[in-house]
Length: 211
Image (cartoon, rainbow, N blue to C red; front, top):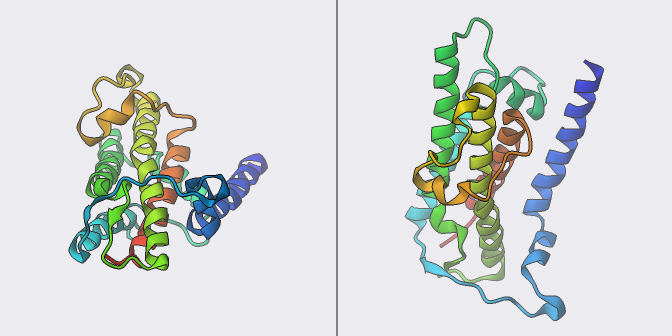
């Protein structure tokens, strides 16, 4: 038990570091070439405030379902411990209900990834101030990681609940192109933790981003 709590504590510290790293200006160092020369950026079409709101709403729905309004998080429970409980059957929860609950999580997360697909590339901005450019560079970088992370989450959960379905060929829809290059590196709880860290960081940024 002490070992589990120790690992959970370390993971919580790592999450906070990752979250602030994703939001910090230093994160943009990976987008620049030596000597300050900027790499060529392939931009998507003009973005509207309505489209930003729709993308943020999709991320918010996932965040509410899994975190804010789930009704499952205990007082003062660490985020790693919470995601572990989310991906395990609850007391007196029947197998069919458990699979339906987790299936709803995965579907909502996939919908969020699909709704923000356009933002994985830097859009054309009417507000081209340095502050807004910075927000969009962070958002597009973070959102580009989301589909691959979701594939890992799906595969990890399948390997734990239905090993016969662990193959990638039956992954269809928006996540299909990312399946071949993605393999789970953690348990489903660990993959959910990483996925929600990305999603919540992107949501935080899009709330401030302007068209």
